[in-house]
Image 1 (cartoon, rainbow, N blue to C red):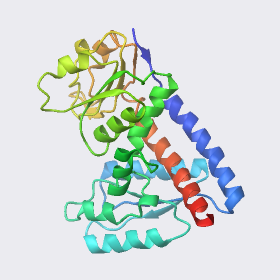
Image 2: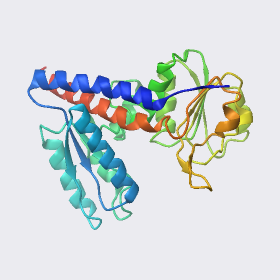
Image 3: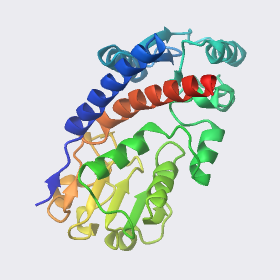
Image 4: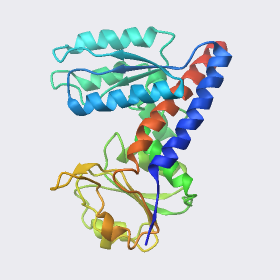
Length: 287
């Protein structure tokens, strides 16, 4: 029976670290770290996510600045808002909640962000810095995956790691973060010919394909570590991951549950990124 990796507990530890770092930042620079959130329209899930992020900021000593343009906002209007936030000295991080309404060009909006305030790590410059192994802001969910692995001291150097999913938000970045830690990484996706064989060789499996229970428990190598990034609604309405959890936990050495695994880590790492961005900006201004 696999050991369950408690994402809530690890996320709380990160939040405690952020709270301390934010207080030290305030004492040193005379202001709190600042995060601007941009929520366009009235998508119910996005409203909930952003509300939780603002609440988390307040709990950790980060000042949040809420911007909620109407659904009818045009791309140029949103670009103007982003540019104004780029110029504000009290804003260290900018979070544009995705998805944006279909009429808005999301790529142009992300490209307009100041890369040093891009706390989601999605700007092309930050993606390129990740690929090149240079310092930069990394996407939050992949950072959360790595923190969960580190919380259990999972040995990554030389390990075979399989990432299932190739999105720019999770799959690709987590593959490069694993490479930075000297894992031997295979990046799989919906068109991989023999997914079961690839997963069966893996010491570490990161499932982020966005399909409920797509990774079968019988595919898991005995003793492997399984990180399930997926959040899907099952036929019964309950949240389930991309991994067939009940069967997988019989074979895995360690596994994250859904909910309560990777999910809590995303907001925690967003807070961490915000403080990191604030520190980098202040140090650069004084260099």
